[in-house]
Image (cartoon, rainbow, N blue to C red):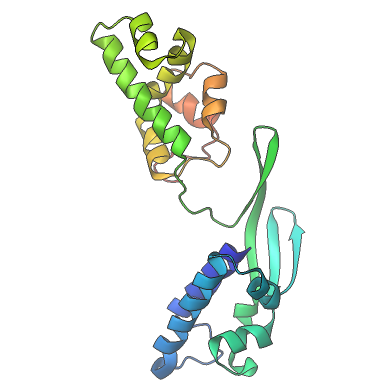
Length: 208
C-alpha cells in the first residue's frame, strides 16, 4: 500500500498536479515535501500510512484507495482545499500470485526486484556448464561442490534459459512467482518461446 501511494503522489508532484492549481513558484517546495513523505512511507511508518489512508477496497483485478485530504495537506504544508482531488483517489492493478504454497499479493506495477537465490543459481549454472563443456566429469563437479549429481544437473538447466529471460532475472523483472524451485521442478523447455509462456511472461521478457 505504502509503495502504491508513494508512486502515485510522486508522479503527480513531478507533473505539478498535486495541487488544485499549479504554483510554479512553490512547485519545487511541494515536490520536495512529496519526496520526503514518500520516503517516510516506503521506509515503513504504519502510523503515517494509517493517517493518510481513509479507505481501501479490492475489486476485480484492481485495488481502490482513498486518502485523507486533511492528513495529506498537513504533510505537504498546504490547505486541504489546495490539494488536487486527483491526489486523493488511487486505482492500481491487483493480483494474487502463487509462490509455492503461499499466496503473494502484488499491487500496482512491481518494481524490479532481483531474486538473490535465482541470481546465485544462474551464476553457478553457467560455471558448471562451462566445466562440463571443458570436459570435466559431472561426478567431479559434484564432489568439488559437495552436491549430488542430480543437484548439479537440475540447476545447470538455468544456463539454457532464453537470453531474454536470463536478462529479466538479472534485472529483477521476472514474474513474482518465478522462483528457483519452480524452474527446477520440471525440465526446462528447449524452445525459447515455450519458456516465455511456461514461466509466466505475458510477453517478450525484454519488454515486461
